[in-house]
Image 1 (spheres, rainbow, N blue to C red):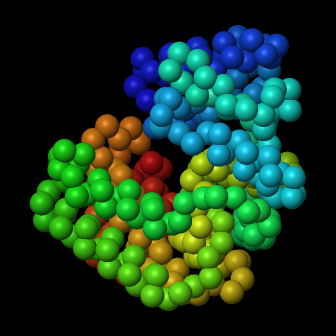
Image 2 (image 1 turned 90 degrees about the vertical axis):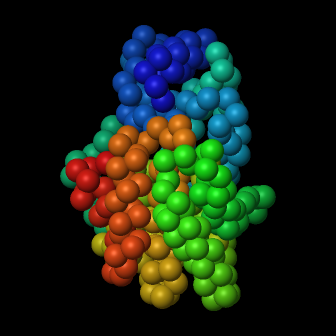
Length: 288
């Protein structure tokens, strides 16, 4: 978000918390991109804020309630507030339990086990959700429309469009089993807590093969996850690189240094295998 929006979003979150009897005289920005993550103080509440119309917060709240009920390692909602989506001044706000970060971070083995438990719990939850191919379609629409991606060169537009289409076909032709997934379980969506890793940002949930989720995590985590189809994982890694590249070129994208990230993702796709993970790409660019 732009700083003017951050100020308004923070004010909306603190106002909502105060109206619920949660003392929130201050706020610390934990993450700022298209959405804002805040630690409200002194009540110690984790608030997620997004402009109205740019979120699926109600789906996320309902899914979180069901997953925590099955014992899944997901961040629970704030117990001192009603489990719902709050709206104020053009922003939607959801309130979650805040956890003090634990250092050092959890091991790759523990992250893999937590993701395995999340997937097992998700197989028990029957909720309407998009398919992973819907995410591909979103990326294809950005690439296909010069008004939405005006700075993307024509040659790169053709290249990305072709890569997204070919990977969609290749993955679907494998006919792998599909289930409910987190959608983006990268390290930025995992909290390190005293009780172990907890997943946040459930609004990206979709149905697909587990390798689609694994394509978002570090290689060291994949090494501890059982029964991976390596060929499918490689295709999903390419797909994730291509989708994220498309989103970084979208007009109005607010990911920090997003255009530089988009250029590097395109370069990685042109260079070919071995396909880097997102965390590897971030480390190359100084921790984006």
